[in-house]
Length: 191
Length: 61
Image (tube, rainbow over all chains, first blue to last red; front, side, top):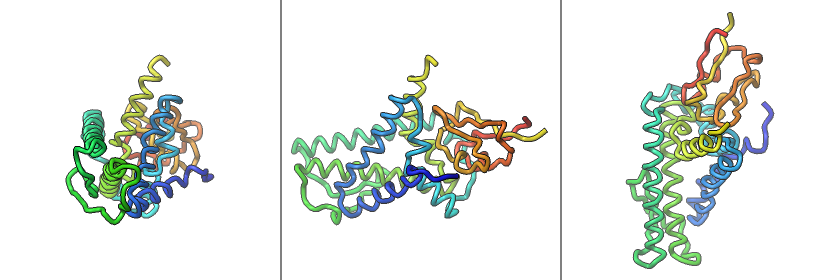
């Protein structure tokens, strides 16, 4: 199959993950992975982001498929269920808003910046090497640490299910996928 | 009767894994689900093996 420019977006995802180790402020770029799929689903009513532009999915395809780091087993039934998909979406957003709340507290001065990346919402990893002082406000850095935690957590979960099941198992319960799916359904309901 | 691949469109997550592996370029993802052109499909089953949501099945067509 002929390669197109967007078939190389996995490089952008990989670069993003590496840049988070270099300077945490690059984490802000990750907002694109939230905004672009939502805009596409609202404007076009399709999931083109998932199957064309998602660098994360391409990375899983590459590592799990080409490099063979996947057992290639079917994912369990409960992981494919709407209950799990929407449950995970709600949980993911609850954690996301909790992160926004912490960012707000740092912005308002009620709390101090913590140079920590929290993995899988549990493990606090010191991350001060990627911090070079505050840009504008400590809240800007706090959001970067929080957002990078979200992105790295999603990658780790995706890699685990990639190894255990099929390369793109993450796509089955990806919160952005579930959300854009719902947006497309609402948008296309009259068709 | 030859086997052909069919998609359960209700549960498809539109990730495009099947598009990538189809040797006949018989699959496109339009909207929110994969669409298999049964004229082009040769029933090799690669898409079904690749599908993370297991929504593709080979049936007699």
